[in-house]
Length: 461
Image 1 (cartoon, rainbow, N blue to C red):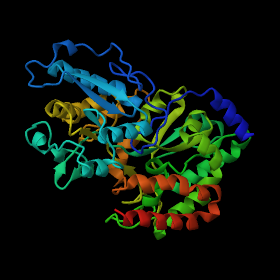
Image 2 (image 1 turned 30 degrees about the vertical axis):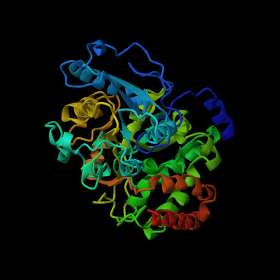
Image 3 (image 1 turned 90 degrees about the vertical axis):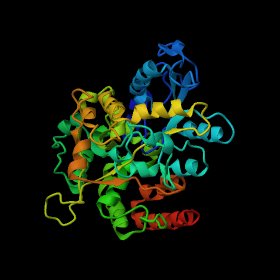
Image 4 (image 1 turned 135 degrees about the horizontal axis):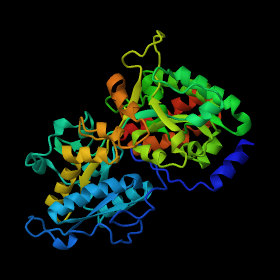
C-alpha cells in the first residue's frame, strides 16, 4: 500500500532538488537564469544593462565574463550581486547553471583542451585534482593587493581546502551547517511533540518510530536517510558518536573505527525500521519523499533552505537543531556531543582566462565582506566570511532558521572529510553500503569491507 501511495503522489511531483555542498544533483540547472543562459546556453535579454558600456576606463580587457555554477536556487541572488558589479566595472557577467554531473564533465573537458569558464565554483571533492593539474589561477598576488580580502576573516578550514603549497587557488564562497527539518502537519496528525533543541538521537528515533507506527496505514514514514546522504545524514552520526570517516593524516579509513561501527549499527537498529525501504529511496530521493508528505522529518543542510521555503507545503515545515548523542547519559548536551558537518565552496578562476584581473575582481566582489553580507541578505547561502550570516536567517520570512547558526555556538562543527581522491571513496559509499541498507544485520561486516576498499584507494594517493 505504501508503494502505491508513493507512486501516485510522485507521478505529479515536479520539484527540483538542489544539492550543492554535498554534491550529487541531476535535476537543477534546467531553468533559465536571470540575465544569463539556460543549461543549453541559450541567451535571454535580461541583465544586459551596462554591457554596452564595455570596460573602457576600468583597465579590464574583457567585456564579458562567463560564470558556471550548479545550483539554480542560488542563481537569482548571485546574478544580482554580479549585476551590481557590472554597473561599476562595465564588464557583463553571464551565469550558467549546469547540473552537478554535467558540471564536472564539462569542466574536465575544458581543462583537457576545451574552453573553461572564466569563473566557477570549486568543491572540496575536486579541488586537489584541479590545483595539482595547475588549471586554477594562483590568486596570491591579487589577494596581496586587495584591501577587501583578508583570509583570516573566513571560517576555519575553508581557506585551507583551496590552498596548496602555500598558495591560494579559490576564495571561500560560503559555509553550511546541518539542522533537523520536520513536517508539522505530520507531527500534529499523529500527536507527536515537535522536535526541540534538547532532543537526543534516541529522542529522534523514538519520534520516528511513533510516526511510522501510527502512519503505517497512510504510507507515512518517520524519517529517511539514504546511502548518499553523507554530509546531511549519517556522517553527523559517525562524528557525533566519536567515530571518523578518515584519519587526520588522510591515510586510513575510519569506517571500521569502533565508534564509527557503533554509530552505523545504531542507525541500522534504531532508524532503518522507521524509514522507506532501500529500493524506494534508490528510485525516489528522500527529499522528494519529504516534500510529498510521506516522511515526518530528516536532516538537511542550510544550502537546501530555499528548496523547502518555496515548496508547495512550506508552511508545514520547520527546523530544529540537529540532535545530540548523550554519550555520558547525564541528560544534557555537553561539549562535543552535538555535531554538525560543515563545508564551504570556493570561487575559482581559470588559469587561462583572458582577463585574470577582471575575473579575480568579480570573485572578490562575491567574497568581500560586502558581497558576503549581500549574499546572506538575498538568501543565497550562509556566508564564508565570519559574522555575515545573521542576515541569512531573516531572508526567509516566516521560517525560523536560527538552528543553523545556533549549532555554531553550542555545538561542534566538523569539516567535511576529504582527501585527494574523495570522489572515489565517497562514491563507493553510495553503492557499497546498499547491502547494509537492505539487510541491516550486515552493517558491521559491510562497513568493515568498505574500510578495506577505502584503504586501498588512500594507499594510491
